[in-house]
Length: 190
Ligand SMILES: CC(C)(COP(=O)(O)OP(=O)(O)OC[C@H]1O[C@@H](n2cnc3c(N)ncnc32)[C@H](O)[C@@H]1OP(=O)(O)O)[C@@H](O)C(=O)NCCC(=O)NCCS
Image 1: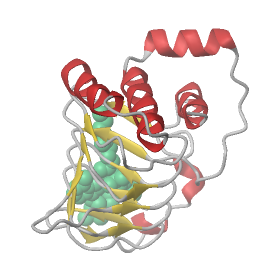
Image 2: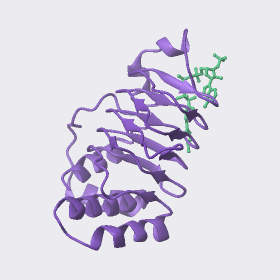
Image 3: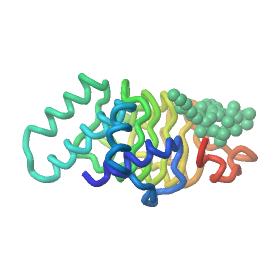
């Protein structure tokens, strides 16, 4: 549940993309928490997942599956409660999200109507730290998205994406050249 603190910090900083998977050293007052929850219902969906995951890893029965349904009915997000997700999860718009992965690292950014799930066998994606998945992107099968990599809007990722790389298109290809060499710090406040 302490992971939710970092989820809130991502929203406080309004960081579209994280720099890495490190803890975010930002103060969070009670007033901040109330204000963030008031302004961003997407955080409620994340909180729902955090509570469901805590329950599923602490032997609390029934509650995870109820909260999964609450998330789906109230926020339109289908997210597996048993899946481990590192702190600092940023789900910009929960409606239409399907998130079923082997694991998701710290400071992930999932923007809108992303699908992380199986392809044709029962294998699921694994996301490293600081991964960005743009709107409408699909990440299918047992692929690995390396630390700090980005998946462009509407991409369909069927192969591993190396750390720090950017994948775009259908099927996704890795961006090379000038765009790919852009220093990561330019992203910090983008
Ligand atoms: C993929 C992304 C992260 C790359 O950003 P970037 O590193 O700044 O890359 P650039 O914008 O310089 O584009 C580099 C090349 O990739 C192409 N490209 C960028 N995003 C693309 C995408 N989603 N699909 C296909 N091609 C894309 C560009 O046309 C450009 O091609 P060119 O070199 O032939 O001109 C970004 O374009 C993106 O898709 N962000 C998602 C934003 C989002 O989800 N917004 C929703 C808000 S609700």
